[in-house]
Image (cartoon, rainbow, N blue to C red):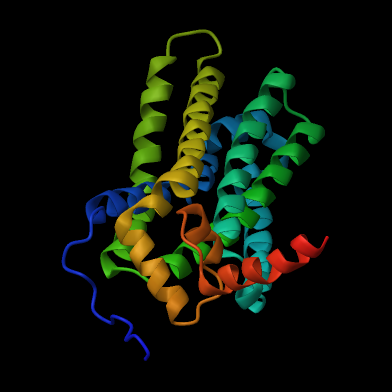
Length: 255
């Protein structure tokens, strides 16, 4: 006797609005690092006058974003979605933090060395963007359309939020000595903290929401191979994982 798999979404699933809020935050987090580079362009233009950072950083970002996205798209069926997205947010967090530490280590001095360091971290932003943007969209495609809409709403809100945040941090140090640099340091610190929150939300909070568990279990039952780690994080094992464990038990007993 075979059991029919439910094709309709249960009417009462907890966590829909929480999931939408998390998706909105994740959307902001997937673009806030790159937006921060655009917003603090006045500081880098003043620091690296010889190297035209506004133009150069955009040219550095795009090839790494497109190249990484092409590689991930080619191997999408073999890539664990959870690891892909967490890796992307970790790179965002580490690169934004590294920009802050680089400026602190060089005491805000320009030069070719610090500029090349900034270029490296901007390239990492492109790599992280390719991981997160496609990974989150693929993950949410199994779920409610509202989740995808919330994620893209977060992308749209990211520019406005970073602009407002930059105005506040710039105004806070407007009359102080070296105020432009201090405002940038505070701005980068806030962006770094936001990326860390995104890591925690996606890794620990989002997968445990009942509605997310349902959709990922449904995707696994329909043959998806990229959600097994997400289900494991929520304490749910797929049939394939259970079979592997049962198969390993006799070997362990014989050993």
